[in-house]
Length: 461
Image (tube, rainbow, N blue to C red; front, side):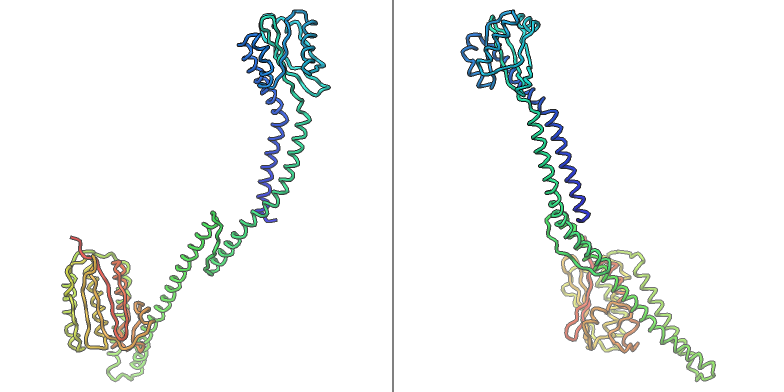
């Protein structure tokens, strides 16, 4: 038997024993007194009724009253001689089929009757195993004896208590089986929940299908929800850890090449192999590492520093950024087309300087990676937001590129030709700024065209 079964059995058994003990005490000590009290109340009610009637009417309605109150009523002439009075009452009772071994009215009782006071007596008939409860009432010169036979309840009570004991013992055996069945119904889903919780602790996230219609089902639903949340958090943590590992690997790769070159050229200078260009190469590689570290620090700063949110003209900011790229656009022989025909509200809310960085990176990437001479930019209002979109052709891409393009040091050109790919931090900076603005952003890639977009809230007038 399981612990829960034993616990249920002992609790139900204690309850049954308590009920039996209370029943035994009530039946043994209170039931006889209650029966006597009920019969006394019955006689008192009848006595009160008779005291308001005449002797003649009582004699006529005697049988009706006996049937109504389930008592025996006899009447006789009132005399003060105890022997004559007692003999007369016993004779009357005998005529009604009631034979009393002990019945006697004392002189004190006769004196009470003489003064009009009713007399109450309880005569025990040991041989008959009964008692006779009587109320004696004098009305004028007539004496009424109202009696009710009370059976001694000792044997009946012992039989009832013995029967209750058998019931209690049977109930205990029934409780044993009932506790096993109930505990089994409870333990089965609990064991499944325990196994599920153990699997979750071992990072095996799964759910259970428990339908009990009670609190256990609610608990199972909560654990399933917790499992799903932990699975999502675990996957997100794994992704972040993988990104961190990739970040460390990428930055190591970015720094390894210039450091190796600096070391090689330094050894060449030490060995007097310098042809006059070694220091220039060392200086250029040092600048590249310095720029990379500056960008990393800039990325960390963008993720943590507070932003200054103001209302500004987005279209004017875009034109200002494009002006900075006019030389590069002409050099790359690109055509940048800006479609703002559907833009009705150019005023947006955000950090103008940070949004300028976002536009700078998007345009720079488009000029760097576009496989077609045409680059398209569109500005539209959708609801209460301004949506910016930039499109350009790409040479080659796959689905992994789209999923990883926001990661630091990820570049579309796997050859890592610096003239084509750059440092790979531009879109990470864009992502940090847009997430700080809580701005929706994303990327669509279709056929040989890639499209970036983001939106900002329009200024509320």
